[in-house]
Length: 181
Image: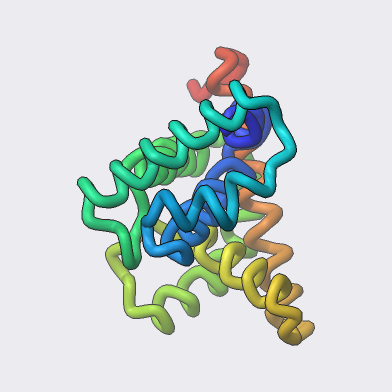
């Protein structure tokens, strides 16, 4: 909970990846609070008060996942809202002549985005979501100690660079420091 808030304040891209991990962690424990308490929450070495807050946070997430029907797949609306906000900023940055480096990063990643969208069959999905899915997928492969090809690693670097720039602009925009006009 505290980690999520810190990431949200510091780096929106890292926050989203973290929250997707939390969704998967909840799914791996069958959206069952007893299992989550036993397998996840109890592992935290924190005060009773912090443990209670953490339990409440997980309970709220489990409740939202049930209400929104994403117990098996998909993402919570709070996480989809991040994608929506980032997509809106992405479009605004591309539409402004003031951000040529962002546009260049986008056009470098674009062939990879198109290829990924063709492979996953989600052509209606926002491009930014496709980028996050690619990053998340590679992260999962690495966690499983699976080999990630050099070509995939190189492709992910382009996507990660684009998302890093977008996260940076998001932070500036949130602070009122970004001028799109």
